[in-house]
Image 1 (cartoon, chains in turn yellow, red):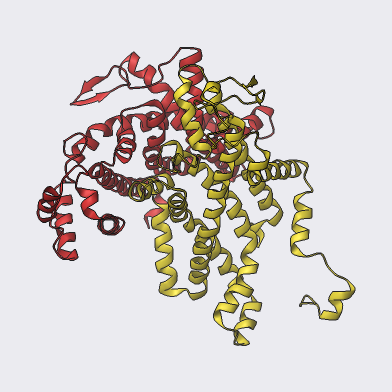
Image 2 (image 1 turned 90 degrees about the vertical axis):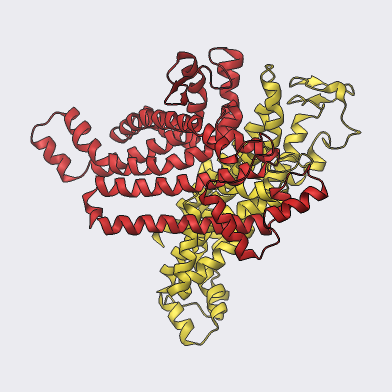
Length: 303
Length: 320
């Protein structure tokens, strides 16, 4: 009975798809809905930054040195209100934060995609092949885990230099191992189940078994890991940019904004590094809470 | 036991060797090694001379052997900026970083274990919930930003503590320490607290989980049945059993603390090797970068080795 329903059955009572079930059970909790709402606002603001932000902070025609270091709530020469104040170049801090969020999220998501592709492929390969392939890949994973992320990323960037692309490469090198370990653990459980045995008996090619049968059943735990890893990547990128070895000055992420503001802090002007930090904190905490909630809903432990 | 130790040390040595290969490949394939090893100020005659002198015209395997030779002799080249041997620069600043990481560790254990113990013994009380909520924030807060906020509160606004530097130091056996003078101690508090933030959260969570696991076990019940006082059961029987995992993790984390000190030292201008490495990266002082990397690899492998040995000593079950 538990076998896949036939086409005819499928039409008569259509069960909700796995995505819809996931969304429904995710939203059952009040705080989860709040997190999702906050995250939507952050993502939408970052994506539509050029239309939402009060000014384009990197268009020199729109900023004026006369407005530099105004406290939050000040009015500009042209009558615009700087809700979060301005920085040393006279940029509207709110606009800079919205643009910076975009760069931070871009780094986080790109890292998750590439680290996911590399890590999941190697993890599945290790689980499916076993033997020396498994041993070699897992040794590499162990090696990766024995050094802290910040150190590895720091050294890679020291040799490669600044740039969004380089930051993503460094973060992928740091994070792929987590995906590989998770994918392998989930795939090892799935591999021993009967449907994989059935697929092997049907002489389905290996790549098809791995990607069409094994991978979809490993997805729940991978989704949880990916969410938490995006948060981690954003925090790490901010740290690297704060140290001045992450993104270039022309594309300031939240970390770089905080770094710029730190110069004014000793003069008692807190807002330039305070508000980008709050934006970073809210983003990372929200992503972590969503990850926790996903873990509860998908419950990868009970696989 | 001895066989295991020898195997473990050999493994560590092999790892060091593997890392030198990676560093060598990194030096030679990521960029032109001449650009990395020769100061950008050098003219073309000087470059040619140095190419010969550094052996960059030799086949790759001979170059690797030369590189290994230099590393074994502790020769990582001369810093472009300071004009001193790169390794000596790192070693000079190492005590400051170790002092900071050690202080952070003391804070993490000193606050983490009591708070975790409390949260584990009274999981339903509002104070416990507050502690656990705070520890969640400790994990998510960007450490460098918290450091800036600490400076703003305690140095700029309240003016209680200094915001940067090491303060007065006392020299013992040729090494300067801050924590032995009052001024040095005042300089140490904020950076150490900042660095400890993540570890405090970690120790709280570990201790709490350990307490929750140990409390329902029969030996605790038996200790109570023997008529021992609650204090004795908790501080002798329970605490002893949760300390092993906590100490293992904390020991392993010491390496992370040293790595993460890069961030804290930059925020508080603490003159350790983390600050040196960031300055060196920004100034493209590559011999220092390579020497730092080599030192970190050795430190990490040593820490892993020591923790493994400690684990064997502490937990008789692992010895088999």
